[in-house]
Every structure is written in structure tokens, then in C-alpha cells.
Length: 173
Image (cartoon, rainbow, N blue to C red):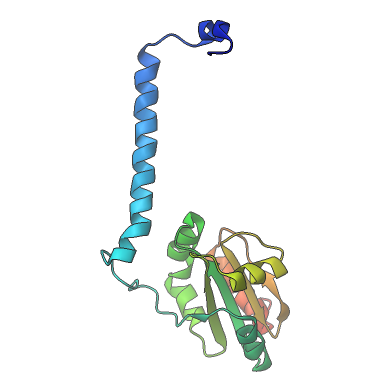
């Protein structure tokens, strides 16, 4: 506007629309503040340390853990997630913490591996890159029926997880 004063004539006139826009932007800012608070509060001990619904014994993600489980003819469920990832939270609460999925992940021949990418990790970044991924969430299932692994969709469904675990065992139906 300082360089071309004529542009000032093209700016909309003040009016009711400014109050509406101010309220909309205020709600968006409030929503962002609440979301950021949900990320920070666990670090200060204001929330439960572990969800009561998650009964799966997650092990740390590593290539060695995958290869070791496959050598023992076990199925492997890989979950790469982050605390700041909204889609990861949706997958966790809508799929991974449901009773039927929890039961499937607790089978004796299933190893559940979780990679936490909340803070930058070269190991997890390399793991994702070798699979052609650059972001979370990332879920993959390995097993005797899927030795190369099968990536699951970004937005998980219970059927997708359960069917892929069956396929990894060598059962297609």
C-alpha cells in the first residue's frame, strides 16, 4: 500500500464482515490453543500416563525386531505414530484400541512394534524412507503370508487391520 497508494482504494470498507471474520479467526485460534494444550499437558503430568484401554504390549520398532519375529514365523504389526499427529490419534482411538483389534494384536504369534516419531528420530526416519514414506501415521503388517510386508491405509479401519493380520498368517478369508 505504501508503494502503490492506489491499492488502498481496492481494500474492502470496514463493516459487519470484519466482526464476523474476527469471531471466526478467534475460534480458530482458540481451537489451536486447546490442541496445543493437549500436546503439552502430558509432559507436565496433568493426564494419566497410559490409556486404560491400550492393553497391547508394544515393543520398540527396529528392523532387527521385524526380522527376528519373521524368523520365528510370527506376524508383525508396525505402528509408527507421533503425539502431535491428529490422524494417529484417530487411528488409535477408533481402531487400535477396539477390543477385537486389541485381541488380534495380543495373539501369541503377533508381535506389536511401535515407533514414536514425536521427537525427531533418525532410525524412524530411515525406516519410513526405506518404505517410501515421509510422514506418519504409517502401519505395516508382516508375516509368513506377507514376508515383504503390506502397508495399511493412512486412515485405518478395523476390517483392514484384521484382514491384513489374517493375510499375514496365510489365511485369506
